[in-house]
Length: 439
Image (cartoon, rainbow, N blue to C red; front, side):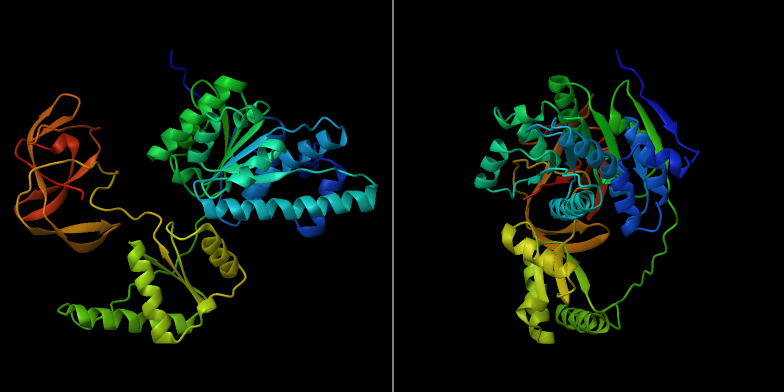
């Protein structure tokens, strides 16, 4: 039987002395040697997490919410290490939807750990031992995975997909039997997607197999927070919500590369690259997003020739590149060494707004269709459309070639209607609609 999660919104801010009484003295002293004060998400979150509660923290980027999640965990792991009770198991799983962010987190954990270790030894003559941090994603090499099996990281940094693979790994999954904390970062990127559903299943599998653990969600501004909290904790559990969001100012400008709405492709390309060149010269570092991997490489090549940039000043970043190249670009970008990085947009979509299905169908006639990248329309050559034979209960669609699609009422498909391509939700489809086929 389904049990509704209990969600509590935290309003009262605890006093600092009530926060730090839970922490080792040298951790508090190290913190204030680096930072002047606790940020709002830290003031609210540090005490709740230390008390073992499930917590969702919503705060702007750069407000210190990651530290608010990890500081309590580091304190507990250090205590276990000092008491010689820290074993070769994973105690904390940090999950992020972005592989690039995972490498950042690893660096951002190793630095404070080394500083705390040095401070405790120097000021208190306490050796906190070794707290291991490791990353396990599709980029992790077999040799690194083998090392993790022998000496597993106490803090495992991973992605939703890699966690599901770890759970079916006969040997390494046993290293998760003592997990006490799971941190889901960038939860706003997961809560409304299939990746989020996949993650929810993985977390329930982890809890079913090895017992309950504390759940900590970190999010940028997102609403409704109570629904995201339910997504984080699942059925029948409690969650405390810390909302320290604030309005963030954006400077948005729309630039048009041509003087007229009537232009040739050559005029558009020339105007676009001239406009990009002016913007790049004006600022220290520029990120450019494209909708395809081939487009990314093409933009890099053209800008390199137009601006006479050196190899180390401009680079492409997308999933087809090797791990070494991507990490090198990320590292140089953070150090301010790159003038331009051209990336594949994180929310690039083609044809449908909620995923797509490849369906065999009869060929109709050659036509041109439009691919969609957000609200940007891109014209493409296309040959196939599918004739819809009927819509039945449960939104089961039978196509002209006999193939079937089962989908939710909110799933959107691109339909040819009156010579134009429009989105229709499944519940809006009718017989004889022509659905665009994904090539």
